[in-house]
Length: 302
Ligand SMILES: Nc1nc2c(ncn2[C@@H]2O[C@H](COP(=O)(O)OP(=O)(O)OP(=O)(O)O)[C@@H](O)[C@H]2O)c(=O)[nH]1
Ligand SMILES: [Mg+2]
Image (cartoon, rainbow, N blue to C red; front, side):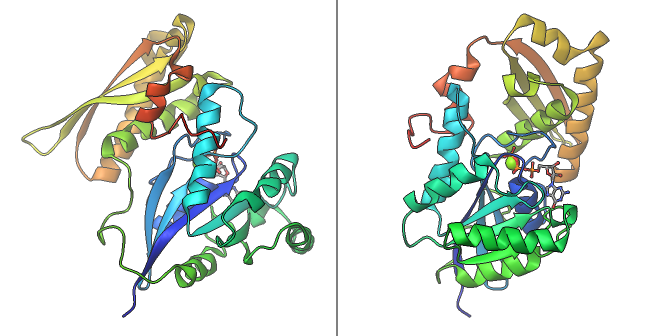
């Protein structure tokens, strides 16, 4: 049997559903999802199988107009992921249509290597009527020569099978890139930190989720099969620390519990999770932090 394998980069505006689609295709939650924009910060690879094909999904941060250092690194990571991929999938939201953000992405598509097919995936079709979809498909295809258009609901899985099969068939022939049982290309330490960041993002309001980062400091295997994980939540200001901790430490306790439960499900074993909150005023502009997050700050394509 001929095997196929390759990289499929998912690009789109923040919140368009890239991580949801990645997780659906992989069949496990390898990338965190929230209702807020700019959840994904690094290029996260999820590995999906379809027949004899191994599809390496490159979930990227959303594309938007960057301002601060972290934003620039995120957007650069997303375009970098697209430029390196065998196939690019552009996700747009059915109910929002061709927004200024989508326009900006369309303008940059011609900069991708000419041989890279770009597929359009109109997501969140559960939110609109079918007439809207046909019109949007027509308009988008008038703007760019997409290799194919799919209408999907990443959350419900509608249309995702078709897209997955198409991707599998379009990937180049070749040996698989990862062992059969690998589902993500991200160190467990980082997946664990991401899970905590998801729970913080869901619990904290306004700008705070964007002004913190989580790092796994130590991971200690125990004889009884469990593991002790120590993580640090870095915030920008002293005042943020109090909010993250919450009244009598309630917020951080709830976050820790939710993250631990998810980690235990993911790993199938007991986890002891310890969170600490530290102030680090400049972390948003520190290049070394981005490297730890898997972002290459020197990349200037953003
Ligand atoms: N109604 C509906 N909501 C969806 C669908 N797919 C994703 N969502 C929701 O859209 C929100 C954003 O999803 P994500 O997967 O985090 O989006 P993203 O593109 O990865 O976002 P960033 O990482 O911020 O760039 C979440 O609340 C999802 O549950 C869908 O098919 N229908
Ligand atoms: Mg995401």
